[in-house]
Image (cartoon, rainbow, N blue to C red; front, side):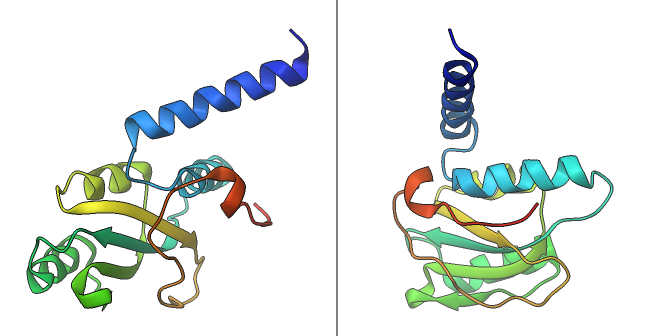
Length: 137
């Protein structure tokens, strides 16, 4: 097996692990968190996190839960099914968020030390190819 084929196989293993371990989290977000944590393991990672839900939970209850867990009040969109909050996250944080039964999908973007820019994602399938964007790590 060539080195390139081995790289592709390992990458496919990573994608499979993402789908298995964090199935509700956008794999691009998982990859970004891992890369940034490797570069700065001691620095908190600030992200604009977007959580899409099925609407079965009262938005005010979800808002209170987010406030209690993050100390931040989320922005709420799409009739209470799309929550956006700027917060420090880890892979463990994402794992905790995805455990709520009403959560359908989690996306996000690194925001560094800047303020949240609000909602930037639409709910939909996670696909490496369609979401790839240039960024410097």
